[in-house]
Image (cartoon, rainbow, N blue to C red):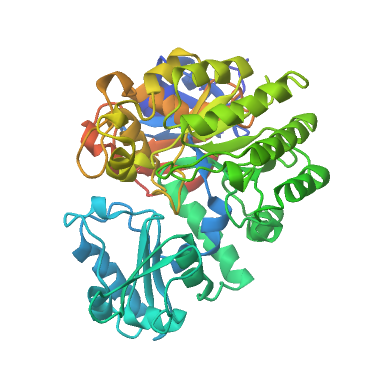
Length: 537
């Protein structure tokens, strides 16, 4: 029974290990009014007549995961219209999902699996063929896109997109053809080809986008996510955020969401980002939804994509990046910018250091996403600016292709995890889902810890592997740093928001190869249950 001098908890979670943050594990957690009231044995002293006792039944409880780099507004609009191949082990299983979808949908309706998967995860190490797609869904146009590498269309999709009649290639895209007949094989490459195909698909109606976005958040909660940082990205104009803001206005948003806002059209970056800066305020919103900063697409001429092709930032692009960075800092906004190559980071930091001499950046939470090939000199420069890095797991799929482009042995320090932490640079973690990577936070955590890609090869050196506690801290408090909330979220100290997940398996003790299979039995945001399997309680 609660001590009369102590306030009674709304809920008391007991009988399971509770990781509250680095270096601390307890056995009980008390929650009141959406925040952590107490943790440890004294939490039990807050049990009152109205306290609900939740029996964890031995399951591990952790702070809610926060994905520091996820393209949620874009993914949510079509989430329920797409197949998600996270964890699908072989081509036969992938084809089975298409066959099942064909049985549930009217003839002529698109079936698609757009990003979040790669042939290296399949036992066959290849994508489905046009003939295989025809066999399981002859009456539906089918489009399956492996990250940003290749897409395969069946015959119905070739007709629906006009590629069966296309002479030659598309601007910015290549259509593979049979060398003998000249007929399209169904395989296409390049952003121009991908965009051409996606444009042929009817956009869901606003109401369906709303339901789809809510369904996406439900799936993310089932993985243990309580927060995301939306990285903006290609094509994310203001209207693309309508479903998200509608959910928020209705009081139906369950995921703490922080937004980076991007340029949309090459050549118009300054004007478009100036529009965001003029008509919005950083950190405007509430505990669930906030506008945060500018990024990750800041200038198309500074975006090195996956860093697999020769890329240089021109003087003109660098000059505009400086102007945008200055305007962002002058408004007190954070900035996040995509950068894979050390040569790109070099130019970006030149711009940021020039701005810093006029407007100190320390405290503004500028950050880089990816930073796969960042070198020691640029780590020191980043540290001096008080800037951070958002690590993601795109190399869990891309490691073989990256090594082929960068040379044998090049992946030993991609990214240089030990050096990043040694410099004391703030580190967030995420996925870069849903096109460039899977949305699974556990796959991402496994990659940080194991350094192994889905082709079964570990290319990252032992020195640059991440221990489990450090990786989890990056995925919780580290990602909260991006939005100035590390004191309030990402841990379970008294006074923090009661955002947490109860896990299917103990992340700290399961064999490392089982980490990707972890899910949440219970997910709580602000003290409210947003996901439950019924396994605890």
